[in-house]
Image (cartoon, rainbow, N blue to C red; front, side, top):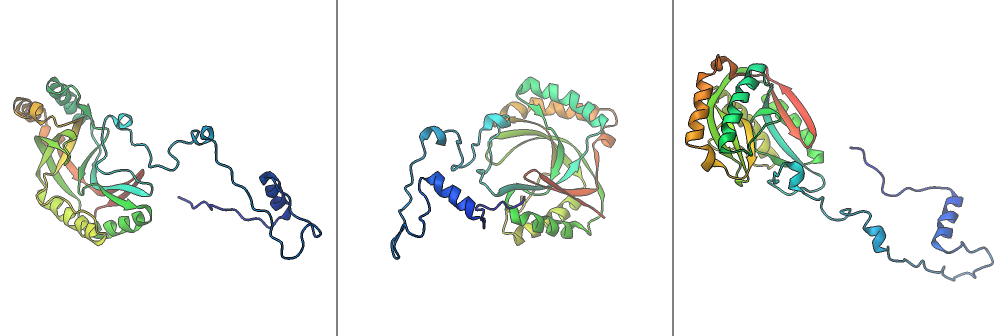
Length: 267
């Protein structure tokens, strides 16, 4: 983001005179004022309400309308210059994975019709934290340096589990990791060190690593756990080649800050 000067200065005398004329007064000539006299003060007029109403929200905080985000509610308020930041392992869904999801989601929607498919899939290595804009690049470089020596690995996510966010404002249907847990903990340890350096919140003490498949607004655990969860797990277990389909190659760590993405390949 480039800095835009708030005030422009000009060496042109004609521009100064034009500005004075617009304000309703003229520059005094050599004989118009004796030495020591003060120029007439400028009178400031209030801006009409009709003009102010043309620019709503320019002084206040940006409007945070959850209806524009599928009903989602921010976990922290939006402030100008603050960037929501998240570190994770991306998962590029293959055709077989999407075929499985095409069977799972309609079954889950019988119990919770509001469920919608995730737009992208990932496994979190950090909580969502707030960074000031000027800290984004140093933060990303620190994460890159920390994970640079970590090797690529495989993990499996094949256990259906229901999750909510901390505020219980959203519910997720996810696939929990059943192998590769140790390598994921190692990566979290490196990311946590960076979080501590920047005085940010570290990851959960006993994380349940998972890939979210679908989500809905509100706390829907009552509807989705129990019978629904059992039926979803049976679909996964009986899906053809599910063991191979749900085996994930961890080849890179990615950081999303605001609308910016940074990829850091593993060794």
